[in-house]
Amino acid sequence: ALKSALSLKVKEGHLVIVDDFALSEVKTKKLAQVLQTLNVDKSAVIVDAKDNETLRLSARNLASHCFLPPEGVNLYDVLRHEHLVLTKSAVAALEARCKA
Image 1: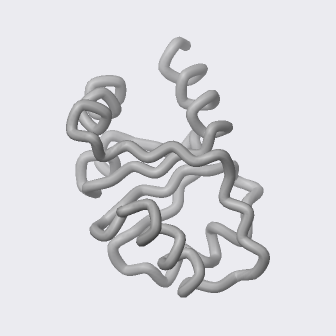
Image 2: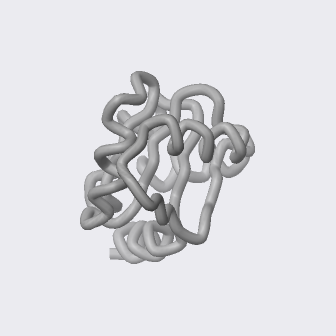
């Protein structure tokens, strides 16, 4: 089911893959600006490594967005949010998870 939901996001053009989320400080406003630059203006699931504490803390105050580590990605959140924003490392982790 998760594979189908991910495929749907690709088909709809609502999947965004970035190299990395290297935020210099915990600032919700900076993350909002980055997401706006990526044309992610509505709700989104942001997926990156669990140890990216700066991203997690910056995303927690964005009402329509949520941060998840790759192992926490689930069908409900993928379908509930309009966009899916992944880092390249998260893509690799999700591919490994879907192949298992």
